[in-house]
Amino acid sequence: MDEMSRQAISDDKEFCWHPFTRQSEWTAAEHEPLMLVKGEGVWLEDAEGNRYIDGNASIWTNVHGHNHPAINTAIKQQLDQVAHTSYLGFAHPKAGELARKLAGFFEGTELKRTFFSDDGSTAIECALKMAIQYRLQNQEADRTEFVAFINCYHGDTMGAASLGGVDAFFSRFRKFGFPVRFVTSVEELKALEGLERVAGVVIEPMVQGVNQIHVWPEGMLRELRDFTEEQGIFLILDEVMTGFGRTGKMFACQHEGVVPDFLCLAKGLTGGYLPMAATMVRESIYEGFLGGAERAFYYGHSYTASQLGCAAALASLEVFEQERTFENLQPKISLLQEALQEIKQGSAWVWDVRQCGMVAGIELRQQDGAPFEPAERVGEKVCVAARKHGLLTRAILDTIVVMPPLAINEDEIKLMLKAIEAAITDELGEK
Image (cartoon, rainbow, N blue to C red; front, side, top):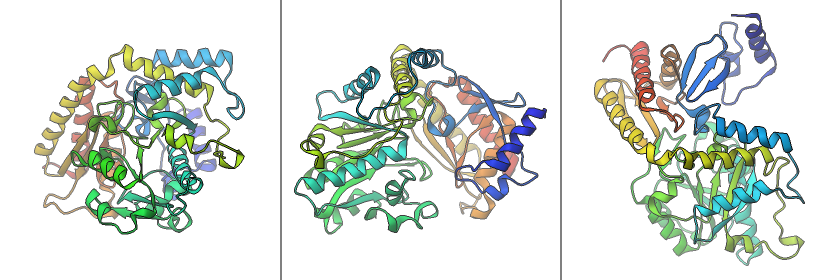
């Protein structure tokens, strides 16, 4: 290891604080963090020159691959003009263009107004605050509760954290946020008492990410939309992870022809280049904020509608068209499905595989089907072992997440799955 890398590791351990990380283990003398320094396509390179497939798209963000020339060029061209200007009291051309293009995916519907923010948590936070404020100032002041689904994850800001169904992350904070009730299905939602007090229902459509890649039953989203409309409840879709092609369509809700009241976007919005989020809202909800100063939505961020972020997002949307991403995606989805089934059939350690488009999870258990003890951290160890075979990804408990950039080719998909097979064998042994 060269001197520069040693200094980088020293600085990190002494001065940095990583997300979702046991810092005492991270800063231990024997732990050597993996320093990532380059990217090209679906490949990442560390400070020692080792290359890895980016198997979780840099925490579910990257879409078209790293160092994409079209997105690079768009950012550089924007940088030559101006990097950032305030969106509070001012405007710029690319924000309006991006909002128009997003509305174009729902042409002919009311989902046409976009509020920009910084990340997935704030996209959700906006939707929650908008839903409550709309109710309060439009003669529905009793509708101040939310319903979410068990084991869900919608972000870490305080409002979004109130929706969180994962106790390890959220139980200590829940009492400080919005009133939320949790259900496991639409049937449980329908059976709740006091639905007249519910402002909105929040869900990740088609597949829950942090819930070990839990795939919802076919038709569930359509049923949920019909019921919420019948009850006058807002449907808030969290497409922070599922948006921008992950499920095989631009947005997961399009699989069942569902148009929500709020659509929350982030991660892949800029192709995985820059932090940026969008909360799309039905025009009738937007109109509920028109009038005097007391009806305005007083919420925002310093980098709202970032000029660089808008440039990257517009370029990313163009790449979808230029590279015929969706046309090329279906064979990859089929290949991934076949490879996942081969892994399931070929290893007694693989209890289940779950897939929705290019989102997949490989759940590991003991050979008798019993879960591993959480303290064993088997999923985490398998992911570390996969590095030796040229793959970076993360586990959710003992479910290995498979979510590469959409730009991955078929040979790289095969390499990715072979790396997971080898890592399982390394850590757990043969069948």
